[in-house]
Amino acid sequence: MNIKFLKILLIQFFVIFLNQAFAGELKVKSGDIDLKKSINYKKVYFAGGCFWCMEESFDKINGVIESISGYSGGHLKNPTYKDVIYKDTGHVETIEVTYNPKIVSFEELLDVFWKNIDPFDKYGQFCDKGKSYRSVAFFENMAQKKIINKSIDEIERKFDAKIVTLVWKFDTFYVAEDYHQNYYQNNFLRYLAYKKACQREEVLNKIWN
Image: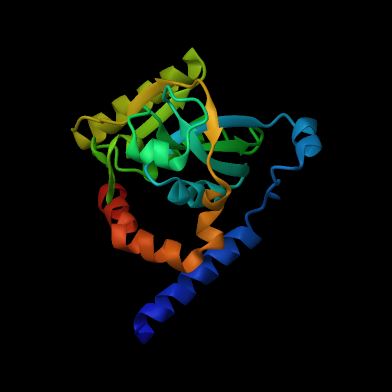
């Protein structure tokens, strides 16, 4: 590993550490059920390719309590990672975002979603191709669906291009295997190497900046 690449890894590790330390909102662990019930938290579901990357993107947002990797949108009950990736289950890699609506809104989280995907890629996201990596904005009611469709119209006018991100009615969310949860933190170097090889940040900067 050359010195320049090592410096990049160390800098990005430090940035992620600071984001976690000063997010401004205590991240509630899955087991803290009583605390979750005591506050009127809400949930929203997005699919943006690799769920490891989507977790990192949403965990940085003030008001986001927790993000969990999983699968949604398909017909197979209790799917495994291998089922979703190698079989035609209809599921896509999805994250469940628990948030405090007093701090961050559905509209703001939707904007975070758009800014972290390529909405013009119908084959997947970045270096991950296939049905399970398609981008999807899930809605749970008509109000959310209208907000999503309005945002799509605005983006299409801005870019003068057709958005191919899917808009699906949310049904069931299946939690992914334990080793997928918080992967970007627990396997930092592997995750960083993967994300850099996929050129995720480069593509996002080219689209949105």
